[in-house]
Length: 137
Image 1 (tube, one colour):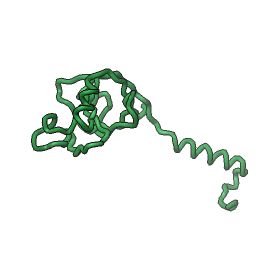
Image 2 (image 1 turned 135 degrees about the vertical axis):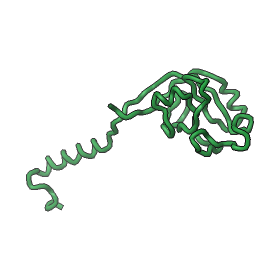
Image 3 (image 1 turned 120 degrees about the vertical axis):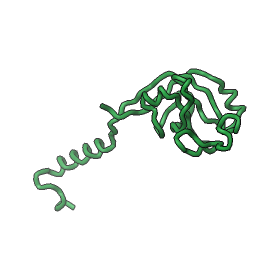
Image 4 (image 1 turned 120 degrees about the horizontal axis):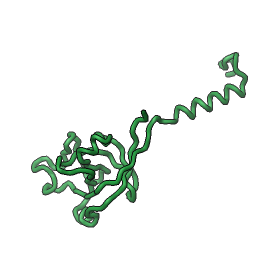
């Protein structure tokens, strides 16, 4: 193993260089963005989706019960919430994935996929802060 060390580095220098390389490799070059939006909830009931295409999202994803998915208003797409972006919603556990788009009439709005209509109705409409990462410039 010692034969594999570069001859110009002492063992302690090599270990420090390796530790730095591992640390830098784990760093991503992103910036967290946050935004307050209005959030409502929707389900996969036929009344809330396209007839005959239950669960088929605007980007072509097939939504299933239990998925952590959101639909976003078109202005949020322009702000970086593009297809498959991971989003954290303040007050809710885990991360959600942007898999659907909302009608053009909505702005600063997300729709959270929920398993049943009762839970969605209890959620209602409320302001939330969402967070996502964008590549650093």
